[in-house]
Structures are given as C-alpha cells and as structure tokens.
Image (cartoon, rainbow, N blue to C red):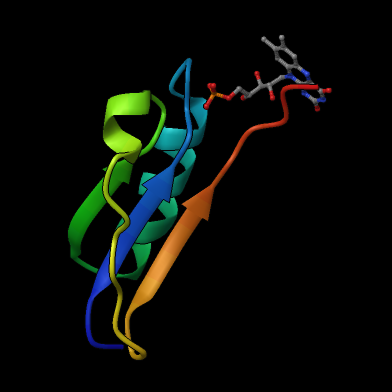
Length: 61
Ligand SMILES: Cc1cc2nc3c(=O)[nH]c(=O)nc-3n(C[C@H](O)[C@H](O)[C@H](O)COP(=O)(O)O)c2cc1C
C-alpha cells in the first residue's frame, strides 16, 4: 500500500466515524474526501494503483 485515503458521504456523521475508524486501524490517513456537500464534488480525486481508499456511503432510501 502506497498511501491510505478515506472517501465518504455522511450527512449525520456516522459513516464518517465508521470509515475513519477502519482507516485508522490500518494506518495513517493521508487524505480524507468528504463528498457530502456539492462544493466538495467539484473536482475528482486521483488515486494511484497502490493506494488504499476506504469508501463509505449510508443507505438513504
Ligand atoms: C431519510 C433517511 C432514510 C434512511 N433509509 C434507510 C434505509 O432504507 N435502510 C437503512 O438501513 N437505513 C436507512 N437510514 C439510516 C441511515 O442509513 C443511517 O442513519 C446512517 O448511519 C446515516 O449515515 P450518516 O450518519 O453517515 O449520514 C435512513 C436514514 C434517513 C435519515
């Protein structure tokens, strides 16, 4: 693993806490991408082939 990142959609914070706990148990998180708000979805993150990204989305159905 080259670097560790988190990416989550989390309106009330539970997914953020869950993703962060998983990632922090693995290692040091380099970047966290909170895509909950539209202004945080303007650019697309670019990852390397050896990066590990912990991604979390809640069910809102
Ligand atoms: C409007 C609404 C709809 C939801 N629908 C579902 C659902 O269909 N199934 C489910 O398991 N949880 C459902 N949930 C529960 C959320 O997935 C759960 O609270 C989740 O932890 C929220 O994540 P967040 O804190 O990161 O926003 C719903 C919650 C809300 C507020």
